Length: 198
Ligand code: IMP
Image (cartoon, rainbow, N blue to C red; front, side):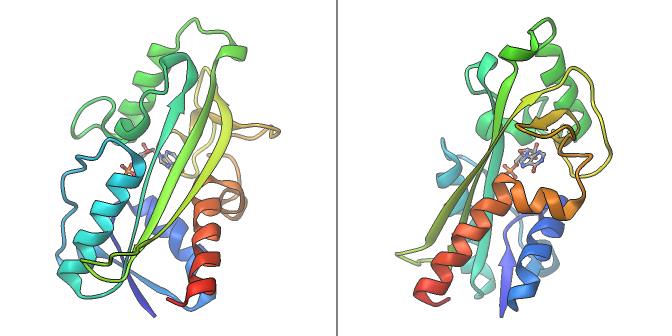
C-alpha cells in the first residue's frame, strides 16, 4: 500500500522506509508529488504531526504518515523540543544546531546533561480524517561534550543513549531503528494499524 511521507527529511525517509517496507508499505516522499511542508505552527509534537499528515493526505489523496520529533534537554528546561530542526535559525544545518546545543551546555557536568528524543507519528487516511492514528516514542540518553560517529542525522553524534557505549550516530542503522524514539513510535503505530485496519 502506498503511503505519502509528509516530510522532506532524507534521514527520516530512510529510517521509516526500512521499518515499513517489510510490512508491505511503499513510502513516497511528499516532495516527489510536489507537496511542501506546511508551517509547523503547533506547540506540541502531536499538533505538528497532525497538521503535516492532514496536509499531505488532503493534497495527495493518499493516506499520509507524518512524524514530528525533537530532542528535550533537561538542563535547558526541555529546549530545543519542537524547535529542534531550526534551533540555530530558520534554515540551520544539522551541524549548526548541534554546535549551538554544545555551546549552550558548555561547562554542564555529565550527570546534568540528560536528554531524550521524542517522536509522535500520525497516520491520516484523508485530509479530514476525524480519527487519525497517533503513536508516540521516547529514547532517553545524555548529551556528550563532542560529536562521535557519522551515521544517523541531526543531534545523533552527541546523543549517547542510556545503557549504551555508542552514540546514536555510531550505532548500526538497524540497531538505531530498533531502539529509537521513531522506531518505538512506529512500532506502536503499526500495532494500531493491525488492530484497526489501515
Ligand atoms: P521535525 O520533526 O521535522 O520538526 O524535526 C525534528 C528535528 O529533531 C530534526 O531536524 C533533528 O534536528 C531532531 N531529531 C529528531 N529525530 C532525530 C534523530 O533520530 N536523530 C537526530 N536528530 C533528530
